[in-house]
Length: 344
Image 1 (cartoon, one colour):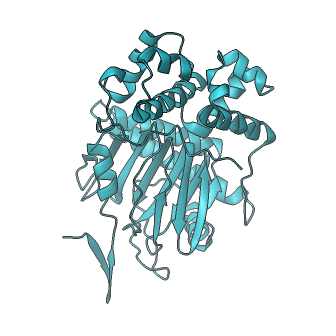
Image 2 (image 1 turned 180 degrees about the vertical axis):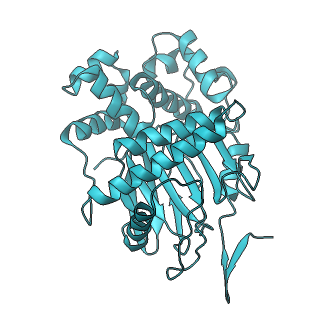
């Protein structure tokens, strides 16, 4: 039976999470969540942090072949993209989310995520007792913001029709702290840490809503564009992939230090520079194996930029759980591209 909620004469279908559940079962995403009701994750008692129906994060190290169904939630959903890229559809609008942005969708808004690249996504769903825009919001008792601050937060979330914003540092730190708490949920004081970090998060959201202009457009910087262009070359250009790259050489090629280069790389493709390079090389190797052109494993390794067939075989097994010599087009190796980077 499809999960629904009712608002007087109206019945809404809410998120069934079927695509996510399939992705979890198939090992396409590393999924960590606490949940109530039908949402996937470790079950939470209903009386624990009332209103919090789902909270968690997923990590995808490759592009996904699935996307969410259009759905509503029985609460306000706040999602934060820490790294990678995802498309958001809400109403008749489409947004291309970049690392560092967060999204607020209200219970009456149809929405879905699609075109999911390698990414790390955090979210929470909080039921504030509303299903329609005219209803009064009821924040749970464990929220410690003042009455005036909660009223301002309600107004800003209710009146803002642009769902995409850039997260401030307080929000980023709160989401990361929440993720750490979810990973060690069975340890002492986890509930207190969760409640504390949730309050820090909503205070950060209030600050972001207060500081942001009415319509904020996130444009990548010239340094970010330089890294993005370089990563596109690694993905699409065999000659570039075959170069004997080191992190130092990559950073120098983009005209910046290693720390900044690595930061931009992880934001764009949810992977470090050398990890992304190996993904690109391995994806090319799979293409060559599928073509079955008579190349030996050593020939494929060298063509793709690996220094030795032994190291190539080790990397291949680690990623695809099959030796390259045993690979066939029916080996179940799917979803083989290094990301959603596209040529502009």
